[in-house]
Length: 220
Image 1: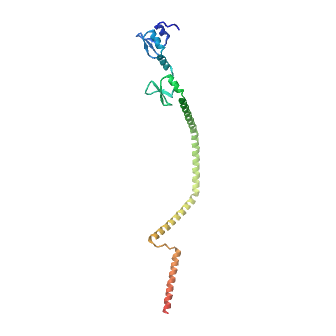
Image 2 (image 1 turned 90 degrees about the vertical axis):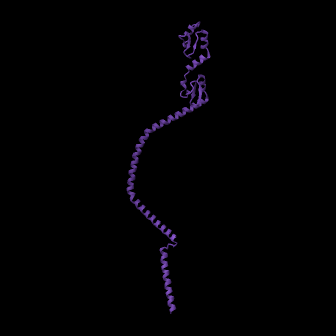
């Protein structure tokens, strides 16, 4: 590198220095303009501001996507989608953030979740083809079963109908007996059975016969 002894040699030695029509020297890396004075140019190009701006421009922030994204409101900040915190838009700050234990733990958990979802989606995709074949087989089996059931119903239908009619008759008989009993309770008269009615008639006949005999004896 040749010795820098004037402004022209300084501009020739720095790729990001250009001479403006106004005579000033502009830094294409930062956009800063400096008066064409060798001492001022050397002070700026070796200063912290220049180094910081150059490092910021050269740093690849996209390498941390989608976890580190631009801030939606402040252009000087970034945003971490894992920790949900804003980050200063400085390479040193970003490197420290992605190297922290919290970021690494959340990143690992997110990767495992994504892998689990991908595996689940793959299993579902593999199961769709087999499910179609299984549905076809199942449909034929269902049709065959329905045909068998229809045949069985034709054979057993008559027996089932007879059984249902017998059950209905028994229910009607019980219902009539219950209605008669309820009517007797309302009227206050007990419901006599067939045996009780026969006994009453015989007893009455006997009483009337006795009374007749008594009268005949008294006449005698």
